Amino acid sequence: MATYSGISAEAFRHPLDKQAEQALRSVPGFDLIARKFVEFIYERPQLVYLMGNSIQVGPRQYSTLYRILRECVRDLDVYPEPKVFVSQDPQVNSYSLGNEQPYIVINTALLDLLNEDEIRCVIAHELGHIKCGHTLLIQMAIWTMNAASVIGELTFGLGNIISSGLMLAFYEWRRKAELSSDRAALLVMDDVNLVMQTMMKLSGGSSKYLHECNLSEFKQQGVDYQNLDEDGLNQIYKLLVYNGFQGMMLSHPFPIDRCQYLQEWAKSLEYQQIRQGHYTREQKEVSVTQTSSDRTQEVDSLKQEIEDLQKEIDRLKNRL
Image (cartoon, rainbow, N blue to C red; front, top):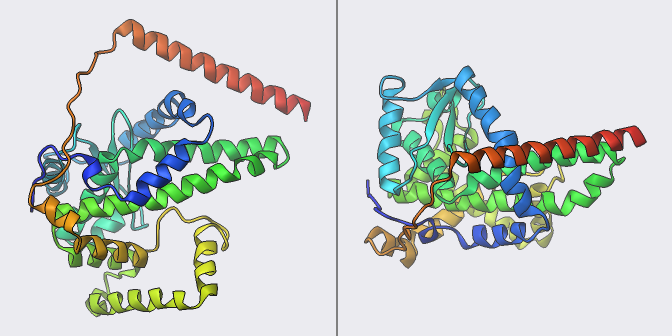
């Protein structure tokens, strides 16, 4: 396993991730919502929920996961070290959230399906999200999607029409952000086949029939999938499926697509240079400590803005 001391997220972020984020941030009002509402409305309640309804990983609690986390944090030079929670859930999944207090959630079903190396791959992937600053945007996406639904109900669907472009921008960015985190996993593992094997298991792996899954066949499936593009109509169908043609927009690219992107990067000069220690490093900045008075003023301001928002919602309800 390689260690990348001082590495900046810019060293491995996928250009499509950067482009999609720039497009998302260009939406009017984006920065205001991100700064004022996300942490106050979503992050803290979710952290309280996890502390009360899951198992927090530590030196004497899921010690193997804790060791893997510490090693991956070291390898990607992630600070601060995020908390990790294990949630009792039959869905094979993991995710990372949190801005001031980042955290990773791993479902028990994922732990039961993957071996230790593959779990390391997943943790490195989630740390990639944290390293790239994706978690703040993911939280904002969740909050905005819920808010858009409320606004849509209050305005007879008009809010949904107004926010459709924003929703498309959020989903497009979320899919592209996965490509950067896949790169983080590859940097830590330095084994593209292992990362692809993990994706194969997450796509349709079964603990009972795992011995019948074949990575070579999965790679060939990827070739066959790419060949579908020879028919232009299939390219349109792919776009439609990603953007809600079957009822729900997809927050992740197809694993087959992700494997294709990752194989290309594994062969690139950029990847080889990073492996040799030639990469963009973090620029250390002097931080100014926020005073207790400043924090109190900020909390009061947030409370007032939320109260104003609630009054506006109540006013709209009374008019309907």
